[in-house]
Amino acid sequence: RAKSMGKACYEIFSAQMRTQSATLFSLNSDLPQAIEQNQLRLHYQPLIHLESGKIQGFEALVRWQHPKKGLIYPGDFIPLAEENGLIVPLGYWVLKEACRQNQLWNQAYPQATTPLFISVNLSGRQFRDPHLIENIQKIIEDVDLLPHSLKLELTESVVMDDVEVSVNGLLSLKKINIKVGIDDFGTGYSSLSYLHRFPVDTLKVDRSFVMRMHDASDNEAIVKTIISLSHSLQMDVIAEGIETAAQAEKLKTWNCEYGQGYFFSRPVPSEKAEALLANPPHWAYPQDA
Ligand code: C2E
Ligand code: MG
Ligand code: MG
Ligand code: MG
Image (tube, rainbow, N blue to C red):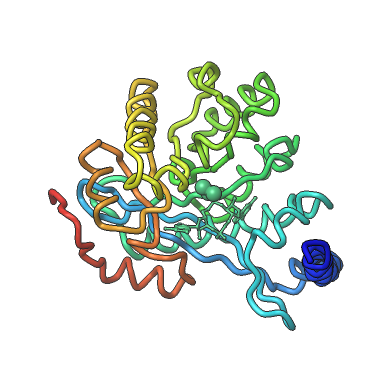
């Protein structure tokens, strides 16, 4: 009986795998058109200054409006694009569109203090592209964006891949006044001994720690430690994956500067993001301002 169960499971599994790989295969062959035929979209998720409850910026997250398959999320095509190299042109499309949008928002909704910033995810291949700096400079010039309102997010594993090369890459971004953040911090293999060498502005605490803050004090301790570590290295902190008021409040009392997550807003199309700027919500957790 166990044996026949095993076989049944195997059959279900392999049928699923077949459909999955067929889907991946067709996505892979459709991807070049996605860029040419304007099928990529950006959604924007607000980044909240926790103390004041104000929107300080947005993270741009790419989606693919596939003509037959509907809206596809990055988890299903970014890995393909990384493999076949299309991530580089795709990434420049994202960068340009995000910068253009942020500049429009900064004109329409001028901020009292610092301008709204836009965070853009950069894959390893883009980070190592020898034309990265000149291309970024061209983009920010074209759309007339202030360089320090652009922040690039690099994952911990990308910067850890070759520390010497990364440090140089980060320094050249710093030279042109672009901000850099380390994304999904805490999920890669420990970079604690290297962290002080990376000239980065922000650490983004991975969602997995924030999610589990309630059920184990260990996770609370980890998050608090990441916050104080960042501060002692002159970096600020963003916590991602905030889904409850209790999480927002805790992070605020621990002096985490920024928060992002479904509690504030899901990633939304530009019209909805703009509505958030036009009519800033009051989020229900204790704020100072
Ligand atoms: P990421 O950069 O860590 O982005 C955060 C992801 O977490 C987003 O998923 C966002 O929708 C999700 N998220 C935000 N708040 C919450 C929350 O409260 N709860 C939960 N459960 N999830 C939350 P998304 O949009 O599916 O993007 C997934 C990943 O794809 C991103 O992770 C990023 O690594 C990659 N990605 C997205 N856009 C781009 C891009 O333009 N270029 C590159 N290279 N990668 C991208
Ligand atoms: Mg990110
Ligand atoms: Mg992240
Ligand atoms: Mg992530």
